[in-house]
Image (cartoon, rainbow, N blue to C red; front, side, top):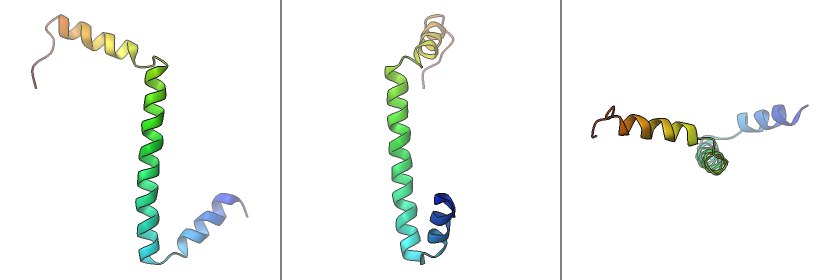
Length: 66
């Protein structure tokens, strides 16, 4: 049985309390991974073109105060 299938079977066997704890942990873990990826992409300059486009639109009066 593959690792994923084994993990799935183990999750299916959890009681409600353990499942809730796993779900909370997983949500936090996923959020942390997403934050690290966004930070790495930012440092790599992957958002620079979007930022420049937004600043250009702002300078050209195409934005409104929130």
